[in-house]
Image (cartoon, rainbow, N blue to C red; front, side, top):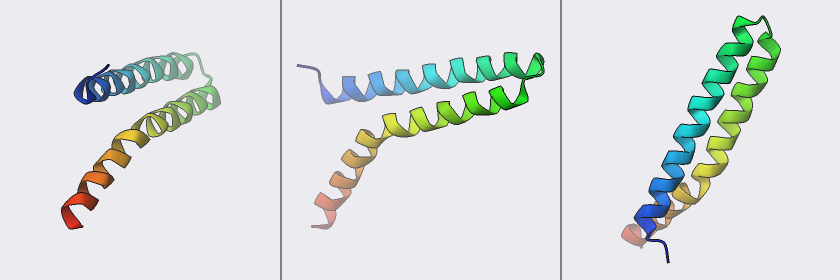
Length: 69
């Protein structure tokens, strides 16, 4: 069974990877003159990171709710 900290660390590594690859790919597209494609890559990466962060945000909200309740 994977520890909670390991799962969050793995999620963080995935987010960093998506961001790095996305910025690299968007930069190549911009250099080649494909501004629209670069914008789409950046948008896709932002949405992917947002989807990956949902479980972490939900855990944070549950923790805050426990402190308040």
